[in-house]
Image (spheres, rainbow, N blue to C red):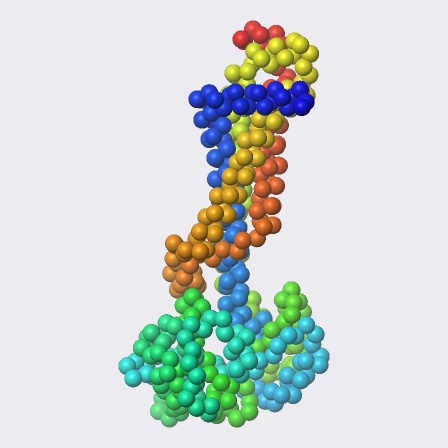
Length: 402
């Protein structure tokens, strides 16, 4: 055991038995722990928000959505799909769809909804994991519909019951609406009021029949293998198909939503700055109190030949011990709180404001490692500066002060 480490250990653990110094050390350690935990939890929640929103938004709109200018129907979907598959790389799936606003009526209520017709494979891929109720229709040829949870509650219907969809052509006054009856086969719940309250799904064929689209479609949902190439693929698709096809990315369709996510990340530098200030003040306070109590000892050590570097290391060890313990406690505290909330959902959110019912958490170990390293480095810096200053105290001054 080295001379400096031995003295640092003696100074540290003998002082922790003293009331005032004990309180200061604990206070400094908890300040670092709470700051570390706060930053980790903040990044975990923001990451959870971003992941949940992206997954749910993409489930309903995919990565790239192709629609017709001014909602014109798109002709020859089979040839268009083949053209995209042959000329555009990185495309995982292409789902043609038919969509339009309709009126949906049950026995007790009526409401305006957005009906989207997609094939069964697309339904299972995009919204399958959000299904909370599911029955099979009585006949293979029955027209079925999938409703959002809040929409089903407003219409007061459950699976197996029938609803009637009305399509008013161009919403003109006096226009004769077309009607089609559906059986509620499934109910989904995403936790996002914007979807659960408005969206309904049916088969592609049923939607084409209701809207008199024949074999035409309203657009295509395209899922990519690599979302980082989304802008380049959108431009390639737009050049390939041209008018009347109009390609847009999910980030363009929901620009305000993703801008809101980015806005939530901007206060992070401020939080980091506050953690630095708290760490610096707490550690410097602890070291200064230690210096006041050990001034005479510092003088004696120097009179026996201890170098300034040795004195610096002694107090640096003290500051780093506080910082390491604070970082460790902060990591344990953050992980525990995240796991408890993720498991039991003690805090709920208004889904019409935050797009989900519960606080989401995305536990990424790189966030824990990054924050821990940053706090550790900052702790070293704020410990080194006063430790270096302490080592420059003259022997005569320390003995006179004692």
